[in-house]
Length: 216
Image (cartoon, rainbow, N blue to C red):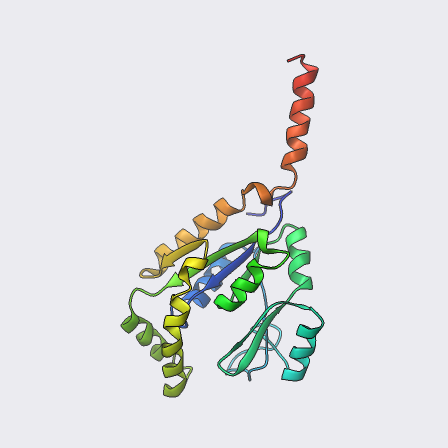
């Protein structure tokens, strides 16, 4: 599925916790091996099974704040008592090399990226749950968080859902396979946006020169 002579996309997936964005992100990575996942930095402790540098880059709060102060974070946010952020340099390098970068972040990070120098290369997609009871059921079914944390996530979910209209696309994840296919269709089309094809202008100039050579 690799394409040449194009700029990469910053593909942002956002949703309230439990709506399915992390699962969908993993499925997109399996679908297209050219996609690279933006490994966020965070100040929270690792969960069981998480690997530093693979799931997150775990770091002390002081180190994180120093990177923000130096302008080395593309986006950053404070969520549930911890900081999260995306280092800028590897993302900018990937975009110029024509590689898409996938972000699993909240609305705060999405807004910062849209307002950044790389914003014109952004594709933002918000994932909605089919219902609030189903959202709670999914959070409880993960068995990763305490009842207190689940309650906090549920209280925060409406604030996150209320940001849906700031995104390019919004999908209701009532069927995982259908949502996955819709995501693939969106990404395939967005890769062909005029802004993502830097070689188009030169190609049109070449066509014009050939047209003139024919005396037309």
